[in-house]
Every structure is written in structure tokens, then in C-alpha cells.
Length: 384
Image 1 (cartoon, rainbow, N blue to C red):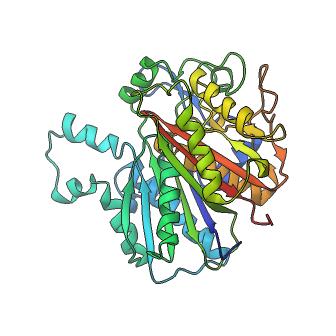
Image 2: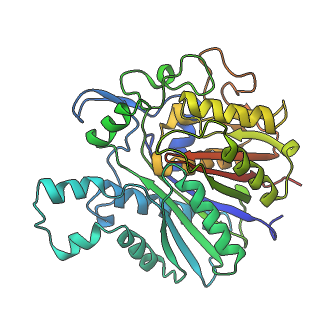
């Protein structure tokens, strides 16, 4: 398998739980949401915001510090597991809203009066360029953006680079630290985000009484390679489609969602019967629950387990599917699916709390606002 598929050889995470992948894992296993009631952003609200931290040398913003910290952790982790970079290491960065804090200050506080160096630091390509300089990487560097499906889009782009022989390895980073009061309130107005309740009470994917999602932040990084190293999981393939229907709503027939999952299975060379786990987009909204429950019921078998970690991590927007892939990959490595506890009547295939893995195949779906559908197929490193 190592010669055919792309290994996730290193993982780095900055999340609402703190700075480091072990804090993410510990929080998931404890079933404790990363969100806390925060009063420093205007009205009190439950959000999973990345706490202060990182190195001042990595930039003036939480965004730049988190991006570089997660990437550095992933590279160091991959090296400790036997990965050695090839001559052409590429960098992909999934971003929806970048440097929101600094851009806000640029316009409303400093009236554009910043140095040229500070201005260049606002550009999404700058943290990527400085990271390439830090490691002496010389492959392509590019930004990917597909709303909440950006993480899956980045993984599929990385695999296409590797399949096409464009690079030897890829460092993929997905960063979203955009929880300003203005951004949070607009998602509340859309009727999808909940800020006035404990996360496990508000966000209950595939359970009765779910009201939507709690918002989160994260920067998540992977080292992806066909080469040496002891991978956490393999990326076998995937697909993306688009509803071409509405700026927020899923097309009611779910035709393109279904097509996306079916095309992902074909691209990965696996059958529906091989799928042991469906790592859902699972934001806890009625339309997403309906669409993904239909996928499970009509495309997969009755022994396929469903889970979504959004009640715990929050919905991390542009980094959402990346943090959810990290949860699946760490789960394979450690023998446990870090599913949240169920708190209400649930879909019969929903996993209830940490569950021993059976290995096998995971389909990771991610549905981005505006009609972006994506699915990535992952496999345990010991899958036949």
C-alpha cells in the first residue's frame, strides 16, 4: 500500500484545546468540548477559540503563529517517525479568511499606516513563503479555498501533485482563526451557529434536539508522502462536486452529494462494503444531518459507524475537515475512534463515545457553504 497511496506521515495541531496534537487527542478522548463561554468578544458566547501562545518570532498575529507552529509540529513529528524529505517539497495552505485580526486593525485602528513589511505580512502567501525559507523547501507553494471543504480540497490537491510527479512530498496546512464578534454574529444570523448554550446541548449531529454548531478555530498540518516514514493513515483518493444550487442551502435531492461519495469510492478503488466509518461533516444542522444520513443509509452498510467531532472541536470553518482528518488518523494510530458521547436519541449507526477501531476504511465528508461537496477516503496503515 505504501507504494500506491499517500501516507499521512506527520500531524501538527493548534486548536481550541491548545497548542499541540496531544492536547487535541486528550480533549477528544475526555469528551470535553474545546469551547468555553467567552466574554471578551462582546456579548458572552460559547466558542472554541485558539488560546494565546506561539512564538513572537513567527509573526504579530495568532494566525501566523498558529500556522507556523502546526506546520513545524507536523514536520518534526514526521521526521521522528522516519520521514526524510525529498528534493521537491511543496506547500499547500487551505484558507478561507486569513489574518482577520490584522486586517481589521489595518482599516479601523491604524488607518492603513503600517510599514511595508507589516503590509506584506497580511498577504496569505507571506507565511507560506517564510515557512518555505525556514526549511529550504523548493516545491510549489499555493493556497486552496473551498469554504468549509477547504481541508478536503487541500488533501486532494496534495495527492494530485504526488500522483502527477510534481513533488516528492507535501506539507499541507489548513488555518482558520477568524472568530471576531462580527464573523460569529453573521453565522448566528444565518441560523446555523449557536453561541448561547453548552456545546453538547447545542450541537448534536444525528441526534434529536440539535440546533446547529458551535464555532471553532484551528490550524492543522500534515506531512504527506509516498516515501519513508511510519504513516498514521493513508489517503486513498477522493472527489469533489458542486450543487450549483444556492449560496447556503444543500440541493434537496442530494444528487451531487451522493455523486461525490460514489466518485470518491471509485477513485480510491474501494467498495461501499469496505467502509467501516463515516467521519461526517456533521455540523448538527437539519439539512446537513438529513443529507449525510441519506448517504449512510443508501450507500453504505448497516455496520458503518457514523461520527462527527464538531461538538468537541467546534466548527473550524476552513480548517474543519483537516482537524477531523487528524482525529481519524490519530484514532487509527491509537486504536480508538474519538467519537463524542451521545446525549439524546440518535441515529442507530452513530458511535457513542470513544470506540475501539476495526481498522478498515473511513470516508471523510465535508460540505462547504455554497454547494461544495467533498469526500476523502482514508485507510488504516495496516489495512490489506
